Length: 206
Image 1: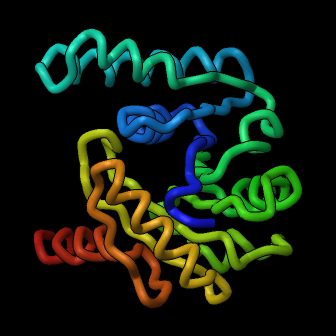
Image 2: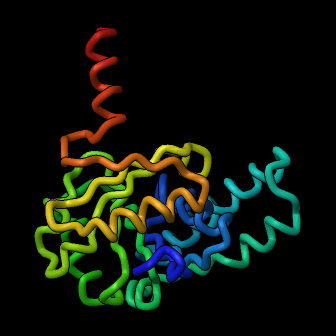
């Protein structure tokens, strides 16, 4: 997978992070499929996407025509296979439960194209644990956006021990292309970078 080959993105999850991640990619010109478990999930995801887009428009970051084009790049689906089958890059933003994420990535292993990059937006779970049930762990890594994803530039990128350098570098390039500032971690550490700093500051403040 080359950076130039990335055209379509799938975002899995419609809670706190998914809609903002979807907006960040759509704003940069990518076609985005936002996946939710059911119609209620999709309604929540659409509302979150629209609210964030309206905020950017209201503040003058985007004009009306641009906002309409961005909205037109978003599709909503409850069908996981439909969301990821033609995606070049997948961003999973499901709840922070190891078993759930392991199940999702095990399914993605068979549903996504063999060359698709599979990322998790986890803020604390290790990519080695999330990818434990995968057969192609070499294409899985963490790309942790901060909240709100469409405003905060930092993204922590961390591979598992089998993630290829190509997957890491394409992910870094893609994140820069959509306007973020990715930081590549060399090793897995609990809490990654930002949360470890926040935890240390909290301990000192107590």
